[in-house]
Image: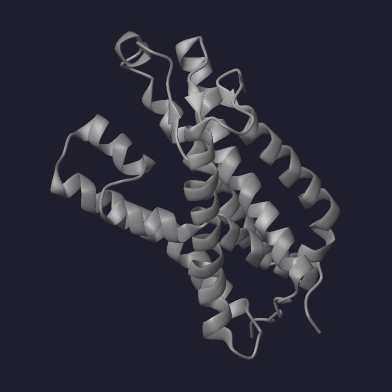
Length: 231
């Protein structure tokens, strides 16, 4: 039988989870940005939830510019998602909790939901490579479900909290939704307004860099909470 683990619903754990999710989210855009530099030979521009390649890069590198789009999703969504699965299968309860935390922190709901309506990185790549065809769209979504659903089923089976459906929904939809609103709404508008830390370094606004630094410090300090199950 599957050994279950209780997710601690404490402010320390939730803040640690928030920092982990923030690092993965900002890392996702950073991977796009750095891969774009490798492909284009110069920096583009990135915010909390979007990136642009350097001007003219698509025309110069039609064979490879889409690799920048692929990098963020693979390195900061699907690889951590399945590393989380690996941790869940360990015997240690701390490993199991960290694995479940990592599965949810990659925000699989965004991969599943947005690609259904054709508005995510994966969908953009498929349109570039295969055109706007229904068969390509549904083949992509079948692949995403095949990759993203088994870790979620494993996370469900591993959660040992009494109100398992509510806890699952909290981390599958609730917390990621709040994080997306905070970064995609509040902080993204602050970047557009250019009133707070308006400068940039290598195509990255200072506000993004400061947020990444704070999330890294928070994660390093609170990381043990992600390995300490509730009794």
